[in-house]
Length: 368
Image 1 (tube, rainbow, N blue to C red):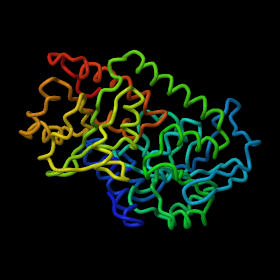
Image 2 (image 1 turned 120 degrees about the vertical axis):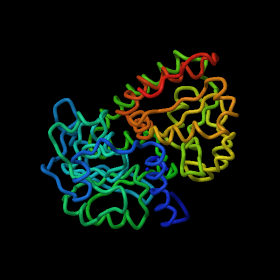
Image 3 (image 1 turned 60 degrees about the vertical axis):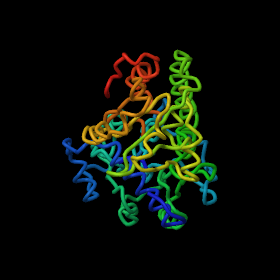
Image 4 (image 1 turned 45 degrees about the horizontal axis):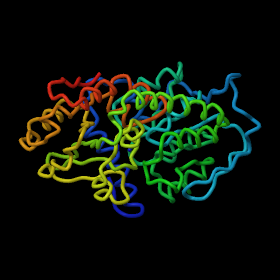
């Protein structure tokens, strides 16, 4: 599923946004599912063979009890958390990464896409230890399932939850939606990590983690001053007739910006107050930029892109400035979390080096 983590106004728009998020990532960033796992069963039944509680992220194995009570302002008001949470449910599409990075193992994790065991991708799975959290469906929030997990904190920074959903979840446990400062599904990874750290009594650990990952991004940017100011299009396929590009407020172009690249203003204008834009295959020329990153991750969709005759007219293709991500890269790019970013940089940087070196003869690696 492409993170496009579909759209209209108010509740309908939020539903479409979550659907688009799921559809875009599923359509544009998933392979066809030969890696079936027990996570499929967990997602469909809500069952779990274990009942994990949160574990601490601090050096001494505990949250900072002195940090509580803590009150956090957000899109729908404010939430007060009286004591260090012990049972956290993650209803955001990518919030589990920040939690696991801080040493907090959720009792429930919302699936996004990719059929990963316990809805946790390889860059984050070591944080699970031997825990087997309940997998929540990626579609409608199942409030009774969430209630059955007896949470004392519900984290939904990347959930795109509506105000009505927030009210229902708040009746179950203190609930953390996103800040009003950003569009739905557009909270920067730094802000998401920081606020989750604050809510779990691990603010110092969160700040240190952010500084470390920002340092890795800065080092990559410093090593490639030639990337500074280059226009980058992060494109995807939405259907057999429709493609698109992410706007600058989306986590993927935000990550590209931290490496020095610029998102064309045209994509923001097309997106309006959404995190993505879409247009017909006939308008593929909109993606003809200094670097074109395809986030499909599905070989069949990549073949569809390559077979389109309009693609051959792109200067980016003619000059070797196009690159395709594999499934795990696309997943790491879409999550754009403190755990997935270091994982992604190992393979994305060499691809960007080859695509942006100005030499059409340089072969751009495909995937990892």
